[in-house]
Length: 234
Image (tube, rainbow, N blue to C red; front, side):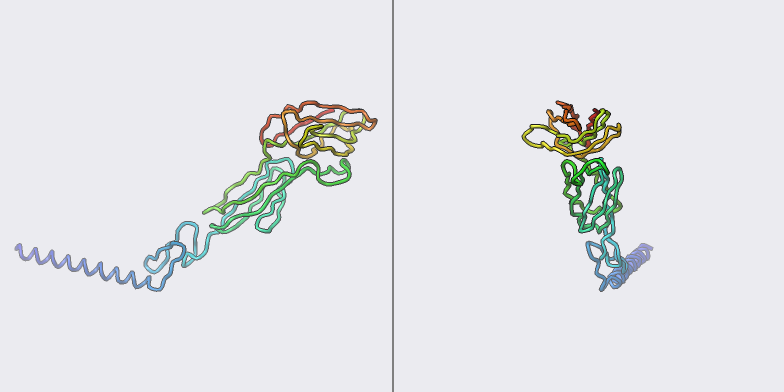
């Protein structure tokens, strides 16, 4: 009886071993000539691809996106990989690319002349720049929020005076960052956004009226936070 059991056990082991050999041989046979790229592995004749790659041979990187959000007070021009787009205030744009590649370029924004107000040129104040160098994610979309740093502030002027403003100076008599702008800001009580300027603890503002008189705000008392704004009312 023991001999019979031993024979049966040996037979089962032999069958199991042969089955394994046959399966392994077949599996290898199906993967012969199959080249899985980018770290993919062959299983039963088909490539199993790592995250970030697709295709029969894992040859194609997946398409993903980087979203750029405008957290400033003015439209941003975005130039990525040679393509130019405009991000509206409070809006966003998405740039598509392949996993493993980079979204590279620049973004910039500045104050501009309100129609019928500032005369002579289009850009008002400083131009703010961002260098863009973002990796496209493995999947989905990643977000890059564009902020103006605390070293700048955005100026608004409201003129409730009896006379129009003809020019203004920001950071008057400071060694760095002093900017004078020739302007015609009407005395209509409206708010005019007038661009970005360097922020200092002693930043000031001088406005001149059409009769030659001036008003000085000796200290703007800025909070020194990202995307800070100062509203000057006269």
